Amino acid sequence: MVLWYAAPAVLGAWLVLRDPRFDYRLAAVGALVPDLIDAPLGHRAHAHTLLFAVGALGLVMAATVRRRALRSRLLALPVGLLLHLVLHGVVGRSSLLYWPFLGDWGRLSLVPRPGVLVVQEIIGLAAAARVWYQFGLRDRGRRAAFLRTGRLDPC
Image 1 (cartoon, rainbow, N blue to C red):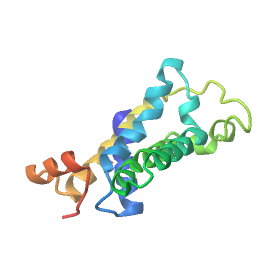
Image 2 (cartoon, one colour):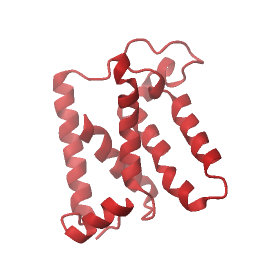
Image 3 (cartoon, rainbow, N blue to C red):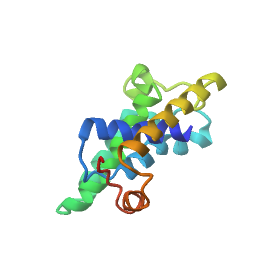
């Protein structure tokens, strides 16, 4: 489930923002966080809510007052959290998305059925391949720069 969240989060953030200064590594991490937090429960819960993502955004904004460079970098985390909600299909589940305002989140599984999981990972692999080629990450220097800064610069 790593590729399904991380690679489309990077690609999606790039397609929407097209900002070479954005830290796309943190968007990928943010897209993985909700499943890591809710994994001990075994189902989608707190971290799969809009309240959690908006709370993370508020925390970043409050913690980075007068620190524009740090704020610009850390905003990628809540962006990744929001992209996770889209990729996990939470946006179609109002009671989960708007928890606690519209009820309980229920016991929706974190892991899809095996067939769906395979298709999702293949799509994630395709997104990773597009990022790899579009941004020239096969070049050792460009790859090292991405891993060091999180920035993507199209070839």
